[in-house]
Length: 217
Ligand SMILES: C[S@@+](CC[C@H](N)C(=O)[O-])C[C@H]1O[C@@H](n2cnc3c(N)ncnc32)[C@H](O)[C@@H]1O
Image (cartoon, rainbow, N blue to C red):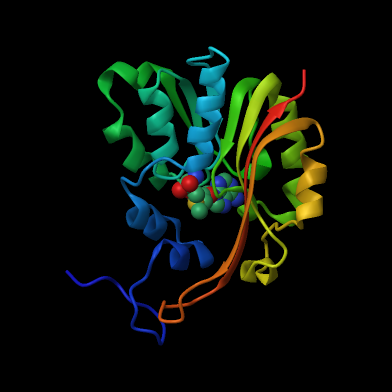
């Protein structure tokens, strides 16, 4: 079956095209079954080096569940949240029977999301979609939820990223990200800044900060 196309460009819709317009069911279909995010794996390796093999993770805006499934595979308990209920119709059927009692899924908007105290807050490609008027409060809740010695893993989108001008998005400069992480020891801080290839459906300029950080005790 041909890929769906929209707009004037005939190149296929990719995950980023669905993200741009916040078509989350389209996004879930485009990324279904993809590998866990590198930031999650780096955080889990860091816990492993400390002898922490499992704990409680909150997967903020878990989507179709690529990171949640990895956490469950490694024995973690997971509270997976997402604003779109279809996320969990993709996730639950792929959760092994033996892991089902370690997963709680919650459909909730960022603005209403209570984050329990936990070892890891994982927010993969989630924070840019928090409305600016809610961002400071949401970040405060994330920081409060991570136990001392626990970790944050995820992405911030930079102020030079093309999507910074879209309404309702939260992007930060490198300096602002560093300020947000002031209570943490930074273990991974990789800035990715690049242009898409011109033949893509809607090429964009990306500026992403990939972060893993350990909350100071
Ligand atoms: C780019 S996807 C990232 C999903 C997943 N973490 C990943 O790495 O693939 C952004 C996610 O944010 C969720 N989302 C968007 N707006 C939201 C909101 N206001 N409240 C809660 N979740 C939201 C979407 O449903 C989607 O799953």
